[in-house]
Image 1 (cartoon, rainbow over the protein chains, first blue to last red):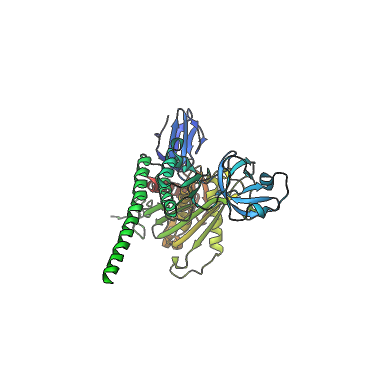
Image 2: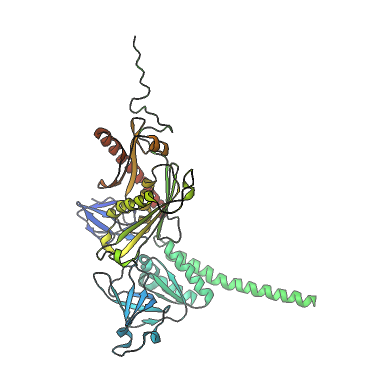
Length: 246
Length: 239
């Protein structure tokens, strides 16, 4: 027996179904009932019932790619803030190999890196690595934080959403699985991208989002250039007035 | 002829100082997600009580000696604003607020899946803006809404409500006057789905029958408040 439908909003402790269903993410089994453990939307796949949380913290998982900021330099490793209850560790050997060099030469506090989670042990010690395509240090750009559960929505099916934003704003965008997004481009386009990403985060659980994002992008990207033109026109007019006064 | 005057002692016809029935709650309003910076938050109005709760976490626990290697720790701070009572309250923690902080964190912790976040902490800040009896229950009720809003996985939403004895009647949800002048106060926090009690305190005197009656009354009250908690979360994210 099931008491909810797909995409229903549920709260912690709400009974979802009886034991014939399988308990997925965001749910737990108690006395042959399956209950929700978070505020979120029900996702039904065959006989598996799970709840996609609307808000969550990033819990590091082996193999994830994340964006982190260096907050600490120790004797043989860097400490990174990865937008999670657990800080990440980047051992010096990941960067220098067997060579012994000063850590400050490579990265200093405040540097933003794109990394891979190599290992997470049982006490959640997070080991990070820099080996792999595209991994490394970011130069410039801005960082935007979103809820990690909304990352798949921001990327879209096969990257449809993120590619659309990239095309429209001409910005470079990198999304970490920990909910940190790095954006670099024209300063005004960076601001447009931030607005769009925040909108996606807010409305991630609604349908027809892609169309709304497209509309918003059209308005912001094209609207901006219109405004600029207007400003220029105004300037020209002012000049005209000035010249006429002269 | 004999006329018996009952003086309104018959159950059900008991009227209280504020005109409520013996099993009637004060009006409640809960709003989730009222603060921008906190991970989760809730605002609750419960009769004359106004309570604001902010929740942060699970986040890194910097005090190493208080960390637990296999689970998260729920820390709680209950604080009354200086202007929350008639005579100005001296700001800062006192014996009462330290006690309430402790019992609140112990009332909330059993509901949380602490083992999912080893070495971390969940911080709950309860600010009482206005007090009118039953603030600890209001604090717990609001705190569990705020924790759900923060996305912390929980077995159930903890809900709290008090019952007690005033003017020789067992009544639900004591107001400040009934609490001070009454004979007993019995705050109860419960996880409504399983009926597990996570907090029970009593001051004053109740006979065992009165205790049973008060407990039943408090649990009924909790169930009603629980529905309002759920509605608050659903309207926050709802259509």
